[in-house]
Image (cartoon, rainbow, N blue to C red; front, side):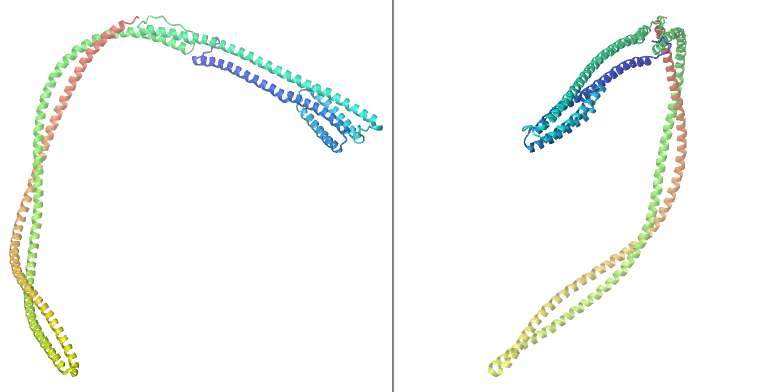
Length: 579
């Protein structure tokens, strides 16, 4: 498949193979479509040309015969109306024949068909002229009663009409034959096309099958066999057999490149195995030496690590002590700071208390003044209530006098009533006045009694007010005494607060100085703690580095041991290959 010297890849070969199959399928499909289209064309020709022509010819044959029958009916029927109907039907039939001849012109299949149709048209025109003459003559005579002297002319025209009809029949028969023959030929051609299509399809299918078989054989030769050989060679190499023969393949494609790469790989593996054997021997010897050196280095590193650990432990203890001292100093500093802050707050509070005590003393003095004013007001109210009590007693005496006057007035009214009763008619006016005076006396007595009740209530309330006022005066005097004592107490509080504020300010100043000193001590302790921490950190770093070094040495020892084992395994592995 590569005789032209062109380098074809496997993909191109497969593409070429499938392209051949595609071309064969395309040829088969195209041929089938072409044959089907041809058969469809022939079928349309049969249905649109030949069968249509046969139908038109048969229709013309029927219509021309119908014209002759109508001609005879027109000449022989005695009814004029019937004749007119036959004449109109004849006219319609002539039009149908003309339309059929025009329609047939569209179905000409060949030149012979066209010549025959043109002859038929000419004969039809001749027949039409003769028919018109016979029709004109038929209107003048009646064959039932006799044609008379026009009998010869009529017979001559009818003979001519019959000859024209017979000649048209010849052309009509020929038209039918031409269309039937054309239909048969088209049918036969369609059958031939179908048979040819079947044969062509079978041939193309057979060719396609053969092409597929050939392509399968070729693909097997250029792909399957080389791949199998490569697979067998790889199996031998996988088993460790590098003594396999070099594989020869002349294909210039991917498989050829694969075979060439495989041959190169086997050759490189052989060379590599030889080098690995030499290197594994050297590595085994070096690993033994490295293992011995690393073991000695491990012992020395362990001693150094133990010493560093002891130093780190001492530094850690020192750091812990410094840290605890620093923490205690920080706590003490915080306590002193809190004492200073609290003392400052207490100083401020004592000053505020002194100020509040002064304000309280001032308020007490104002309260004493107010209490004195209240005492004076209460005394005045007591005097006024006593005066009110005396006035209410005087009012009671006046009301008593008014009551006595009202009683005497009532007695006078009673006497007047008695006297008016003695006077009879002459004393009636006096009796009326006596009744009015009596009523007035009764009302006065009632009002006096009401006033007495009010006065009695006022006197009772006044007595209660006097008693309440007396108690209020006693309470005011007691309040005055309590306020006086509070005034003396507040004066003592003010003096004590002033003394306490001064002492607290002195304590606050001392606390601030103590806090400043504790901060300096705490700073020194912190610095000492930092130094101890740095020392401990350095010791820990050295210890960690020593541990890491020890671990590295142990890893080197382990790696040397592993390297020795790997070298031994490598020797055994290389020994398993056949080179």
